[in-house]
Length: 125
Length: 125
Image (cartoon, rainbow over all chains, first blue to last red; front, side):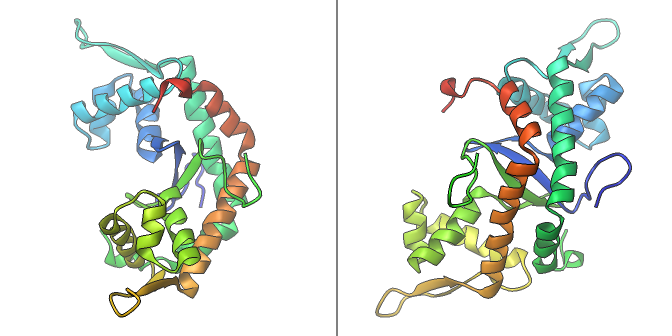
């Protein structure tokens, strides 16, 4: 279920929901990670086959959902701007990845139970 | 974080994601529980301020996502039909509720870390 990077099997992931809003899920977590790795929101989005607009929207959603922005960026400029994770961004990503690992481990029996009951994935997109 | 029913604080819940699809989350789990309790998809939906059409759509999504239907129903008839959870439906609901409890317990430190960083909920809907 868990590989060396601490990521869970893509066939089962979790989304953290506050109230009615999905605040943090696998897509946003991956985006944060790739922004950290590439130093660019557009490059991060591109690596996930995500439009620049979509990547920006997700970053704005995340920045609004927390007390401090998770991503800081400079648009334009000679080098086309750049982006990086703030201390809050690093903390949120770290909590999420640890939670994924904890869920995969502590919840293994229940997850296996759910997986064993789902439709055959080979017939799904 | 957990009350006597095993439900987690509504301010933090989890959604189980298979592949790109959110298969099971707090709304669907609550709907299953209310169908079990009321014996009716429409009554269950109503108790969640959900339209009949929306409740049916969610039931159809869940039924398609698993090997066997989670909810069986009889439309129409003298008593307006009725609905109940199948054995698979009971199993899925049970796994989900247990997973919620496990996440809330095993993931408490990470969840508290995330909660402490989120925006002030008093300013949100």
